[in-house]
Length: 95
Image 1 (cartoon, one colour):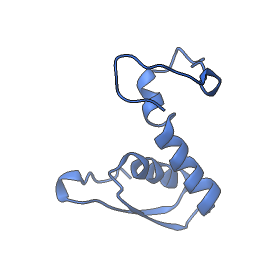
Image 2 (spheres, rainbow, N blue to C red):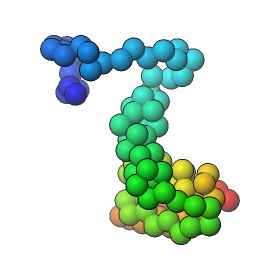
Image 3 (tube, rainbow, N blue to C red):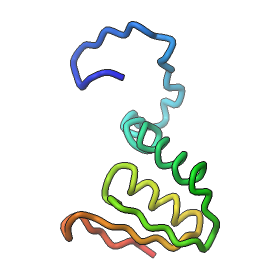
Image 4 (cartoon, rainbow, N blue to C red):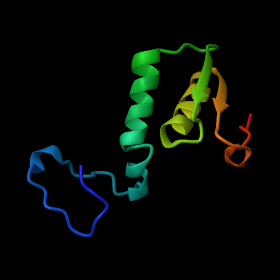
């Protein structure tokens, strides 16, 4: 909606919402509760509609959306395979 800047002029304040959960760190809203989380959730549950035991392949599993999809898939009980760009990005999953 806006850039990474010190000041922003918002011309459409109706599109904003107040964060009503002070017990959660604000950083959550840039990840799991933000655009990446919404994209991962909607793409995984609304588009792919997985079932327990399904096989899920995640390309770019080290990215913001991919790592969340991997967690959602594991929680759902799916068998997950993730692809990353290099060995440095790979972290083995905890079983």
